[in-house]
Amino acid sequence: MRLKDKVAIITGASRGIGKAIAFAFAREGANVVVTGFRSPADDAAKAIKDFGVESLSFQLDVRDSKMIDKMISQVLKEFKKINILVNNAGAFIVARVIEMTESEWDYVMDVNAKGVFLCSKAVAKVMISQNMGGKIINISSTAGLVGHKYYSAYCSSKRAILAFTECLAEELAPYRINVNAICPGDVETDMLTEEIRKVAELRSVPEEQVREEKLRSIPLHKFAKPEDIASLAVFLASDESNHITGETIKVAGGK
Image (tube, rainbow, N blue to C red):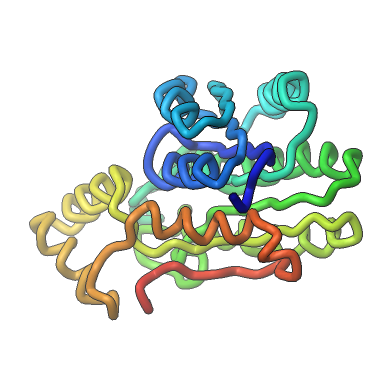
């Protein structure tokens, strides 16, 4: 087991990519802390325990530093340490710039960029004090590498994560804390289904047309599964990646 007895926090783990990462970590022996935005990720936590490890579940708004500090305090009370942080919680909006509201822009930027900053800051302090090294994995997106019309807020927030990853990696390197980013392409999740629906509505075209256009743009001609992202997250969280930091890795089927 590559993560035996490690303690990992995964934000936005009630579904999709975050849930897949939580399960993958548990299979590798990690005790996993999962969070959800609108409610605690209780179902995920219950399922994680079936792997023979421990799990805690919290309701967490990653924009709220007080909620983050409270969660971390409870995690340390239960497990005495934190070894891994996966910043997965995210939000998106599909809208033309001239029609987007200020509050919509702020929401996406706050969840995707500010949330990564706040969670990383809080956990990094713990990791430094522990003097045991650590792993921080930020879930960005291929949308952070190339701009797309209607995705200005999302692309901007995900690109901010990449710059932050590089900066934080340099700052934490002396403490043996590795910081890396994963850039998934299109992943078969509820979020992708909602994205396709909104794009189709915005363009006044059938949803199936948008879906087929996306598939044609991927050399492997298929969407990733959440487990594809989870496999890379396990590697980055394990000792196998100890000499990798400040990197951005795509999981996008060749796109």
